[in-house]
Structures are given as C-alpha cells and as structure tokens.
Image (spheres, rainbow, N blue to C red):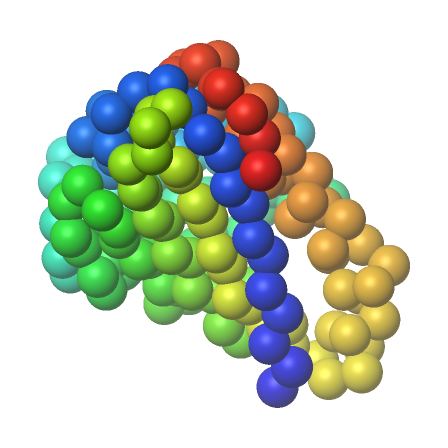
Length: 154
C-alpha cells in the first residue's frame, strides 16, 4: 500500500477558536465541498466529539458513493482527526490543525491516503485522483477564505 499525502495551509485573521468552530461543525462540510460532488450528510443530529461517526454520500463520475468517518482525535480548539471507516480509499486519515499566529489562525489540513487496486490504483492516482483531490481542497480553501477572510495562503 502506497500512502500519499496532501497538505494545505492558510492564514485567516480570526482566533483559533473561531477557525476551529467552522471546521468542527460537520454541517459546514457540505458548504466547503464542491457542488459537482453532490455531497450530503446522512447522519442525523450530529454532535462533534471524540468517537463521533459521520455518514456521507457523494457522487463521483455520476456514481453514488457512501463514506463513513470516525473522529479519532479531538482537542478543541487545536486539532481533530477524522479517519474513514468506509470509503473508496484503503486509507483516509485527515488531520485538521489550528495554531495561533500574530496575524490570526494558521489552518492546516494533512490527509494521508492510499488507493486500492495496486498498479491500477497508482495509475488512477496519477491520471485523475490527485488532480481531483487538489481541486476539492482548492475549492475548500476558497470557501473557507470567504467564510473567515484570509490574510495569506501558504
């Protein structure tokens, strides 16, 4: 299994607590996900916290896919981690971190992921998957920037 990593950082002129609040609200995930994925949360009455499980549905190439994650680390307002229990990936571990800087909050995402299907998965990663993940996370940063007001991308 080859593990890939995706990193994103941005600085927003808000407190760490304000930045954390946007990301800890699971319903904001639908707002920061590109519309072409037709993303929706299936779990009713979500409460964020250690051990919380969240089920989603989205469409990829017109195919509906289900995803389930669990919050495996939760230290407000500094970080939390969601890990896929069910997804199209062999591994999906998404660490959200928030750090105070003089100019505001540094918001960082680190995703470690691995695709199934060996050499076919590696080819799909090179040809399409990485580019689509970059597009998804670029979209996220633009929307979060609108929600919080970004000082400088990193």
